[in-house]
Amino acid sequence: MKLAKDFPILADEPEKAAARSESNVNKLCRLTGTAPLSGGGTSGIKGNSFRQLAPPPARVRPFPCSLWVARRPVLKKMEPRSCDTFVALPPATVKNRIIFGKNSDRLCDEVQEVVYFPAAVHDNLRGHLKCTYIEIDQVRETYAVVLSRPAWLWGAEMGANEHGVCIGNEAVWGREEVCDKEALLGMDLVRLGLERADTAEKALDVIVDLLEKYGQGGNCSEGGMAFSYHNSFLIADRNEAWILETAGKYWAAEKVHEGVRNISNQLSITTKIDREHPDMRNYAKQKGWWDGKKEFDFAATYSYIDTTKMTVSPGRYCEGYKLLNKHKGNITFETMMEILRDKPSGINMEGEFLTTASMVSILPQDSNLPCIHFFTGTPDPERSVFKPFIFVPNISQLLDTSSPTFELEDPVKKKPHFKIKPDRRHPLYQEHQQALEIIDNKEERAKTMLDNMKKLEKELFKEMESILQNKHLDVDKIVNLFPQCAKNEIRIYKSNNSS
Image (tube, rainbow, N blue to C red; front, top):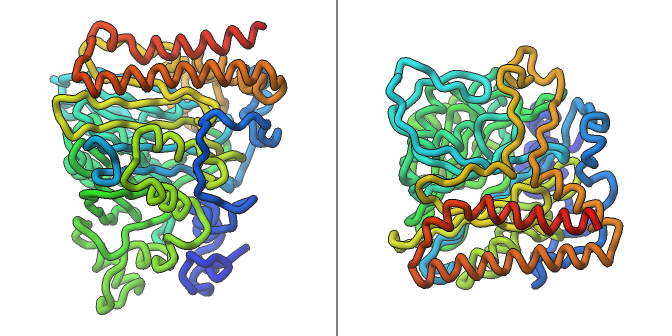
């Protein structure tokens, strides 16, 4: 087992790190990418989003559709590195827009769906809301949300609401023990923040209040392995962004007014703390993590990170930081997509964990302009199409990116959980998986398919830019915008899959 001294980003506390065991030290190293990246990380972005035609190694590909259940690995211990979330605010962006982006990196055979839930008024407040594992109190009103989520759970990896609030979360570990007891998942907190808040800071309030009342915990994977963690969140709206990082019930938050910021699978809030749990510093003193004299550094205190090396050490947090800063002043939504597609940096992940879905949002500071949210709903953003979604009344259901439902028979709802794993592939996912087989094995057909995907995406980008420039929204068309885009993408795959 490697200890903190083996990784430059970790504080020089080998004895304490050894005592924490593999569950915290090795997980932290693997998820933050502090071990050297294979092939050496770079921060370059190349021009063609669909440039990569060479197939990835066979072991990192999602399983073929026909072998979905039979080939699902039974893993008892995971070595993941998962997720990166980004935000860029003026003057780092152009045209007075805030740009939000996230890659969701999950187990390679996990299906992620894109789903929409309308706003609702809940008259029966005596009833409870069933989240992934536990029930909580319902509120009177919830806002419309669009979510990208692992199809087996209630919450979401990332999403947006009708008021232009976007949230993405990350798995983090540190000195505080992770609770295996079932509580709210970080992904539940993402959805709850979106459903109950109309600004980024109000979403922060929702999350920390629920964290205090119900706690966080439970298995974050559908399968035969235990995978639990604490959570960090990047929350953005049209005006500002907040970083919220947690350790058990304790938390710190940093407000972002301008420029760029990213989070990965490590604590990253240092001495700039704009809000915090009232007992956070006291608890650290009681545990002997802070002497109460030196300047309080949240990441250094609650984890093993040497925060002086965060932006120079090998790893995805540093790579993301470099990519954002490389384009600072000229960041557009297309720039953010290129960052999410970047494989040499490790941001676009391959392996037992891979990028299973991606999201990019445009949040104009002009409230007269609509927010536009792009989702892939499929693995590997380099080989997927970013499809736009805009909130308008009476949106059509997103059937082609919605997974089958199993109601009371769903194994997530039964105890013990996860005895079986049902087939959760939605129509877009199924066609995309077959398309990837062609991309990997038939070069000429792959080129035609990728060219058509790129053409579709460029047409969508042009159409969305026209909406923002002309300030005109054809509501009747927008109602079916995302569903129609998904159908057009499926049509591309079917034409190549059948030829």
